[in-house]
Length: 225
Image (cartoon, rainbow, N blue to C red; front, side):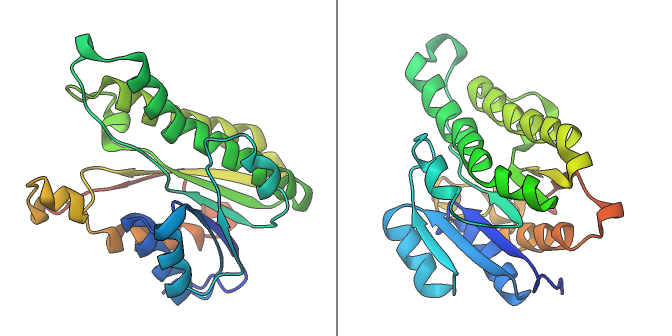
């Protein structure tokens, strides 16, 4: 098991299926956790996991940046995201705005919130969740989703190149398939073709526990099938 007892980790999207699995793994590894989310899902996460702080924030709102800058963390794990498909010909500006706001703008605001402290202490990790489609740069009826998740990957990898000399590193998590969640099961996806969120969470904890000279910048996790 990873030992993260010296780490303070901000987890966004608290209460979601992936974030819940990650929170359990972080708690088991002894990390101090800052939970960021919205509404009832955040309340459920806060009831289940001990957290040093619980923040109810809309990360697509630039006002969230000032709130986050009051919190000192070593690591940001950003799981906020949205998925939708549409025919390319029928895609609308609202579709574009929704996917890029949820997937990319929320990440930008979260990073802007935590980055000043990380740079001051010359230590930090920024991890964001991209997608298998973005890793392959393909996906039928998913042009906007793929583009928004590819933006997540490009942003984090560029941050890593820019700031690694200042002690801040980046990592992109690519679930190379659908995550096993109640909504995906309701959609009729077979469990054996989906990725167990607990496996993703263990991969995240393993990545965070690597020494500085063995940092992982891109992490692809596949389902068994």
